[in-house]
Image (cartoon, rainbow, N blue to C red; front, side, top):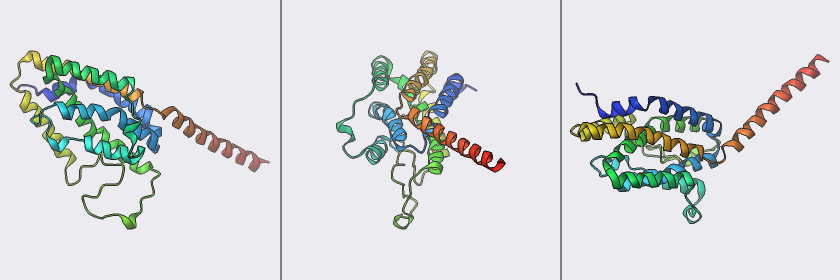
Length: 241
């Protein structure tokens, strides 16, 4: 049986995928309860998802996976309704979009690699980050005003919310869509997709490194830890006197 393209892309990027996961954990783990950092993380990926949704046909990227509107809803929540007036894409975003445009011009089929890794990432690691954020969040939701329906989405969580949809099924469907679409491609194009998959993570990692506010947040957390240690030390010293 011929190995599916999604499995080939996944296997080929296993090592750099781990680097990406480690980078996210190292850079964002201490900042999940920081709205500024979370919003900046949304901002660096916003235009990448928007580009794909505007340039990849619905036969590959169906409307149910589109997230541009959800990105914009969350960015308005965190950065205000006028956030676009002062927005200027940073160097890492410009570089990413330049590469996507080059791919589109030379062989648009290779954008499939970006669709697979980015949307599967949102449905996998994105869900984990969202759940961790819910646990550590400083938000105080007003439960009395909460609409207790299945379609209710907490403000600021639109991107990672898929009401009335199974995350497992969404991931399975995406694999099936891409595998079926690519199955009749020649081996040269399939191999190009596998190679381009590596580039996806290289560019993603540059975006993650450009997220602002993380160092400040980590220093703040370190200050809390040192304060706790100092307090404990002083308490023990007084107790032993």
